Length: 348
Ligand code: PLP
Image (cartoon, rainbow, N blue to C red; front, side, top):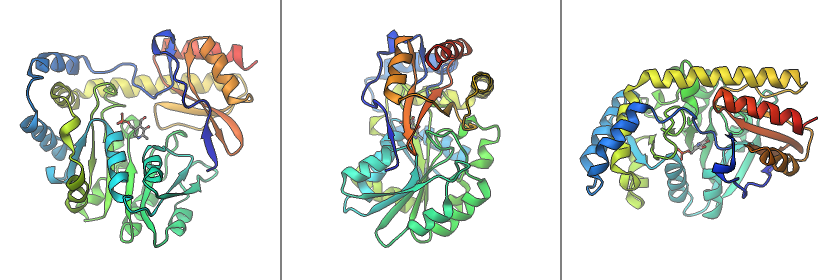
């Protein structure tokens, strides 16, 4: 592997941080209407939410223009990334994905006995689709693509990705993780979900953790061919980890477009503020399509994290291609100002 994370095991105590910018959480959520719905349904917590979950799946299916049979729900998309990996790699094989990218599915695949075939991102931080296609061999069970990508925040061209998924999925299942897609102005147009109705063997992962600000309420889903979902759900059921009130909070949040628009707008304002701060300090950055920004730092990652944490600002640090990088999540503007002040103290 080309990239690794510094001190990935140390999560600073949340309450001790003045600016918690280390987990790509939405600082504005959940939507007040979703909180109200959660409170109003908490008393139903003695019941299993079978029908209620099915109703939500129908609603999601309408939004995604597929049928409920194309949807599998989970308590967060992590659950579904991991379950997919457990089922597909039960007998080994290999997984092709970018380096750096989001590692949750890859790590589980490796733990099941599969090997990871990392393909470096291109110089413009987009996926090297040609090299990824060339990396596929007879043992490849899955290609994982995170778009926009984490930890880089970068996008891969929509038309090229559609073309790649259409062609490659004839040979091997393609998994597209769209956790951060909601931060784009034209998210719906950039999704790969339209490939489902064309019969393509793709799996698209979505989460309520990011644009909906529900990371702690836990809800996500995948959209895939019914046959693919049958294979996964034969071994591990989809909805059993989801709490009753979360289902109602999510349903209300889907309708609260104003909240999503607000999150997207404030997130974009914070990105501009951080770009300006970094430019003024003479630092470069990877232009972001997400709720976080990756930029190179001239300091060893662990020492950098310790200094930022001492100033009560939580961020993440990575070693990518032999260089040190900081990944900062977009918090509120006040948090970004604390981050900016801390950065100027630490990196002088
Ligand atoms: N996929 C990506 C790219 C992520 O960054 C994350 C979380 O940060 C997830 C999936 C998992 O999120 P959740 O389990 O909250 O849906």
